[in-house]
Image (cartoon, rainbow, N blue to C red):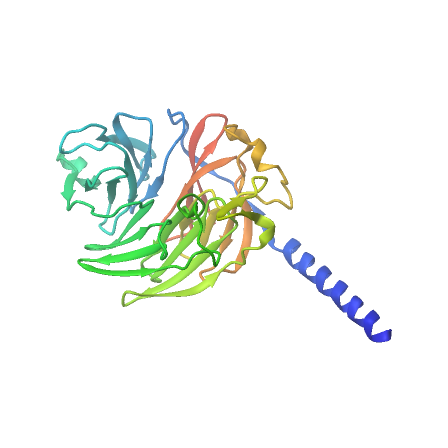
Length: 336
């Protein structure tokens, strides 16, 4: 009997310790500076930080879907990219990071069209568009250009969820999140991807599930160094369909800084809103970003001060740029 009581006391102590550890995560509030006080779009798409520019995508624009902001002047200098059927146009463009300085890579979600846009060319009144080889990949949801002729591609419906394409060499990696074949893996395994070329780290964050993966990628050999626990309290299984619970979400966006993996996440210990009630009410978006180290450890939770929709940065510093709601869409920056 005495042994049973000791076990119960020990279990209670462990539970209290776990709760204390979660509540003792460092929480901070930062002041932000407004870069652009109004963004005219129904809903902003992806935002990217190059060395000298911010680029944000307007998914509803026809002419000029990629907006270029000079961060030294805090001023938009151009809107580039055209929707259409022409040789330099895109049907359903998606922008992503490029390994070339001050450039973005654009691929079409429904055609094989791919191209670079070299932003510095705008200063010389030159066409920034440069056609890249056609994309033969199918059922992809994300591309990162990590070096010349080298890409990481997200393919959530495949047995291996990612692939590295290095010229004509292909390396596939990334096991399914759960050990069973799903009929809806394309939907539930989607998320944000990013790459730190200085640390050679690749990061994936799930959109619909509370889940992060970190890989070392050296000599084209991906090695999983961290994955978060995906508890069954976050989803249910019906037949071969995974159904994430709608009251909580995973990461809304991801960016990598010099010292941190930064993720838009709601701090449910402070703001325990039911995510299924948020809908298109942007004022109910999370105000917090979670900062992880490159081994997956949660370092702190930062309150930016306004609801945030997109984030961007680069691995040369710890400056975070965000698209927030105040009450219209604005671009802000803060030092983390």
